[in-house]
Image (cartoon, rainbow, N blue to C red; front, side):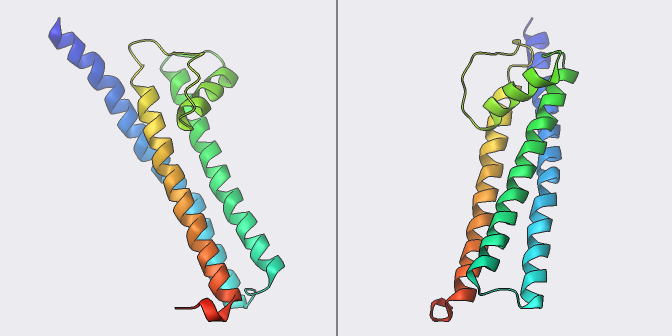
Length: 152
């Protein structure tokens, strides 16, 4: 009995760890897009005006948001593959509640796959932290580019 219980914990744990690797890989897309945007705008000399800075900032936030939505969708598809939800809308809603750590609790997964919920919440918290760092770094760069007295 104990042996089968360990297996039932290890399977969702393994699936969750693979999902973590996949979502971190997905997040490399908006991260790369942000780095390319900053490098391109800097090389063109388009930095230092309020409207240009606002446009860069808006694109960075859009890239981060799109990355998170893709990751939520990835987890939703994974929940469907595991047999937890039959339609994408419900799976996506449940995934968004987990990923954002909102935790309504109105939809719960079976005990077999329940461990995926906290793993997705941890994944979302970590990647929201990466988004925050990315947005902050771009904001700092934009402020320093606009206000020369704030450099170094």
